[in-house]
Image (cartoon, rainbow, N blue to C red; front, side, top):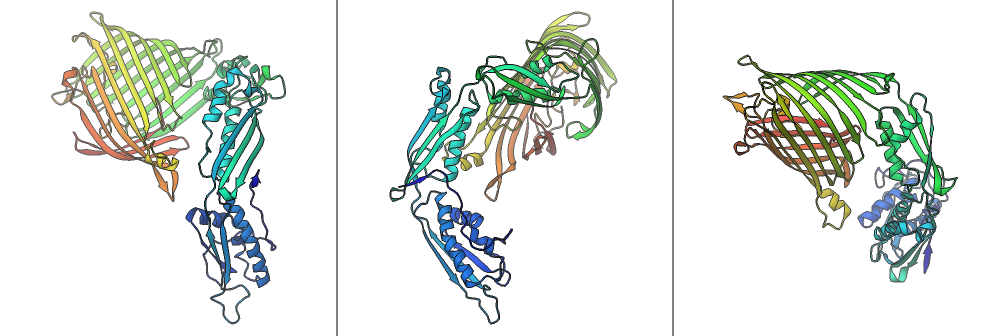
Length: 613
């Protein structure tokens, strides 16, 4: 019986190793001291080529026979140790030295070939697994679920092939499950792998000490000058007395940096004090009180655009943030002024905004005025807002120089619920969002109206029946999207243009221009059209593999459809089909699609950056 606490890669060479070496088996005999040839299964050959000490000495062309023999003696033990990391503890290794290319006047080692033949034997499998938890986690009734998770999520079960990498990964994952919640001082108390070579079995023993359970105490802020410490506390949302969770600290840091008030934020738990009231220390670097941002960009939906934005983080007297932005694009010009309060104890914030815009939509020029006041809150997985809105639009049909001015006042509620495994690069999960408005169309009479818009998306991983993780990931996933909306009002009422629906473009129905799909009269887009909308999409995303490894690129095949009408029974769905690529870029997901619009019989290129739900 052999007991392994840690497997290492020893060096037995008697010659000082060079810093670099050529690729194994490459180069001519005159350029290297010897050529190394390895006959073994692929995984073993790759391991030896990467880590075998012998291959590093190939660049030494003046090795004597005695020095080479010394290296070969060390190489057998080195290879044996390496094979043990893959679970092969009884291999047969044959190393021979040949000199088929020796010529008169050649150097001592020129033309020599070292052949290594490996018969790995039976790979050792895991036998018994003993996983013991000690410390506070062993007795705390609140930690029952956590204890069960450590047991249930153990990754190296009985009967599975043993390798040092798998053993290390299993230990690391079990420890992380303790470190992630309540027990930031958890550690490995004892770790042993008892190898039985004659039975090709290894028994695993792991003892984890959780240490004491930690709870949040007071929050201490360092680095704040312009903004009060209470602002950090309101964004951090860490309640004194709550159990410590690593994910909560990470999310708090993200909220602080996303808030716009801080350029950086670092939160850590003081492990030297009372675990029941552990101090949380927040180190922040505040953002400037004011900043101006000038931007230039382009998209396939809106064309080229430039923008100028000014932010005042704390307007004197009211401490609200004011953001004023001008955007000039190919088909639109907008000025927006958004004012938001700092979050209160309830995490809700007040908001007021004004927007003035000029847009070209097909043959229509739309002039918009919109004013809002309300409250909103933003959580990691759930956003909500409610507000009062007044909107006035003037729609001008350029073809016949006819204008229509409409107004509406409404009370609104909007939400977005996210249950994705990760953002901004989800691979599974779902999201649901909606907007609800109830109000009155203003004019000669006041007609009540209701507006509803719902949208949903879900990612469904494929290949879940595959036993191999790589095969499951390589199968990719399906993305399903749907949108339904309607404006319910008397047929004679004139609803503002922006309260109606149009569709088409990068994020709805690809293969068509932005907002190209709507209801038409005599071939001209109507300002009164689009009281109902329905869109749907099915997309297969599959990772692109290079040299057997996943890359940051994915391929996509999709079909989109959508319709807009004044009557549901008059829906005429437009279809777009295409292929595309996805890149996990440093600034977010990049979407590149080439789509064919079946109704227009034309190809369109679509580009989109970012994941928003």
